[in-house]
Amino acid sequence: MRVSALSVWFVLASTATLLAQELPPATRSTEVRITDGVLTDMVEYQGLTEKSDAWTVPLTVQLEGEIKQLDGQRLAMIESDGSPRTVPSQQIVRITPQWRNAAAADVHQMFVERKIKEVVKGVPEALQSNLVQWQQRLLIAELVQSVDALGNPQAAGSYFLSLAKSDPPHLLYADMPMCWSVCEPDEALREQAHQWLQDESEAAQLMGASWLLFGERSTEAKRAFSQLVRSQNSAIAQMAAIQGWRLTPPPQTMSNLTQWFELRDRLIPPLQLGPTEFIADRLMRIGQTELAIGQWLRIASQHADHPHRAAKAIQSAAAQLKRLGRDEEAQRLEAWINQLTPKN
Image (tube, rainbow, N blue to C red):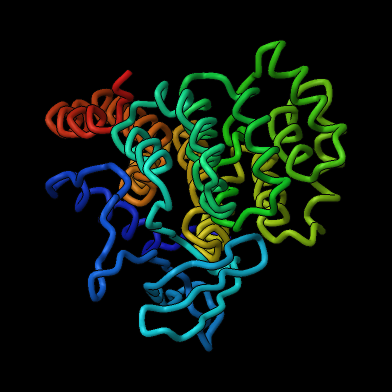
């Protein structure tokens, strides 16, 4: 399948539009609405559509109220008007909570301000503050991101596995520290990945296989993916299937690109982060620089709640713009990077 002229035009046009606009602030929103004087949790989820084709954008619905339950199966809440509402967790794309105590609110604010070392120190205390379990999951996800940003994917992976054992909502699987590019793990990470691959946890197997897909344990990794695509956890099954894209020979990239775009865009938005990182990296490696820049800017604009990974995407885009002699555009991106850089 060839990439249509329309698909290429759309990506290039999106790149130009983003570069021409004022760059948006790239921090997770902490705004919490007040309804009749009561602070409320906010939820966004993708409603079901009658059509299932790739060109139909799912309707996004917003809810306000008090969350009572949030796990890998469902979200249950009492809306602001007092009516109960239940939503399958697979459809949830964003949660903006009213933090139930000051310790949790303080740690989250540290994350927003990109004080990642303080997040790492503060999360354990916040978890011991009698915090409701669904909010504990959100804080652990921010801990995973922070530890990964500090350059320790092994520890980040261990924290994620503790999160995975608690049956988190699907959107938090975007935080799983996986390999989405052609990379060679160091000896310590390679050994840890091998241990994950042998674990009973599907999340552990998925992480391990992603780091070992190339190398002497490649056969084991491929075998793991072939089993994980049948997982009852749709987030794990989807990520395992998309990891298989990495085995596509570079010369076949452009003939698969439209299909990759379509399959990625069927995921809930948080889970599109890793696949987009892969697509951008692959396009850069085969010399499709403009298309790669478009995908990196997509990450920066749509995944600002993952500031470390958004910053890496912008850095990659800026480097390629400089290589193309587009220094003014690169400088605009560098200002954006400063908004995402950790403060400590």
